Length: 304
Image (tube, rainbow, N blue to C red; front, side):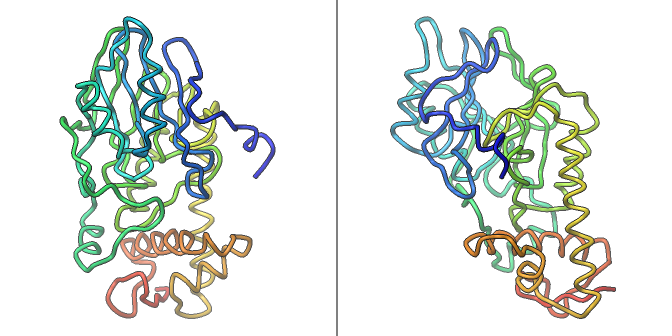
């Protein structure tokens, strides 16, 4: 991780102004999966929208409520997706303020057919953990726009990291949740994550001209198109590495992860294995590989 990325190190609970009408509060939940912690955004000057309230932590709830200045009222709570580092505080914040929770749907909404099949066979997600109890007050579909006093947010369905993942367009800025981050590539962990959907969502975002991405973790991304292009190249490189490894014979996702992710710390090999399995599912759909048994994370795969 380079020095520029590591330089992002705000104090948890500190309210920082990013630009007129937009503030950020870092949640106190740093980890190998969340970097410094979850970014919670406050949009607006009178009617305030919160984007990704984050984990259910008392200090973070207090920081959000304390950030409301005199004459400001919290009117909307937007959630990008139902991972435990993004959505759990939404319910308490809604009870405290009366603001409705808006999202694509519950934790299982937006899953592709193949991911529903894998979940039906008992495959559970990994990584950040799923907020299984998350339920929005209002569901948003692709293109829905919600307006407040002086701001408007457009919902963009961006499944891939998570089936119910939304990005929110604010003029030429976009709140991209965990779909795009500057400090790391996004985890895609079946059945919650789907690489086929992830790549399609990257192309969808790349079709528009953005000034900045505000991510769920890490600093603002000031070269959005370049970052999207890097993400897509990165995934294509992983795909080529997996296919090259399978050319020598069948292997499991874990075997491929330990071979390809040589510099990954042992604590993150599980996440790397999930990423490899996501590629194997995508390659199965494209009929470039096949499982030698039932499609499962422990199956051995061969190249076609």
